[in-house]
Image 1 (cartoon, rainbow, N blue to C red):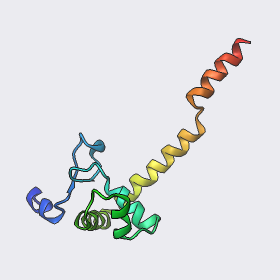
Image 2 (cartoon, rainbow, N blue to C red):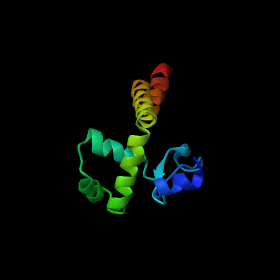
Image 3 (cartoon, helix red, strand yellow):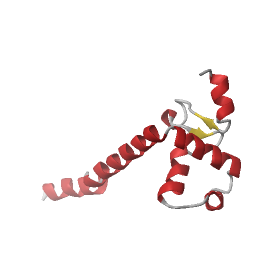
Length: 108
């Protein structure tokens, strides 16, 4: 499929390595398709509720992001699950403050 055809299919979605590491985002916003999908699928927000939460977006952008999500659901869901795993790992690691307090504790 040519790039031009993809651009027509999802005119509001871009993927650029310089923006969010290449994750698909709504053009000129930095809002990831995943952010919209999570609000819709997990949080149960309607497109109108998403616009209320992110008022700089419009309904066409929301619907385009959801369309892109459903066409690439397996890939985006895998990325989301990976993000959740990374967050769990970060929660288990000691914070900077805990590390500093540990160093101070070892001095005494």
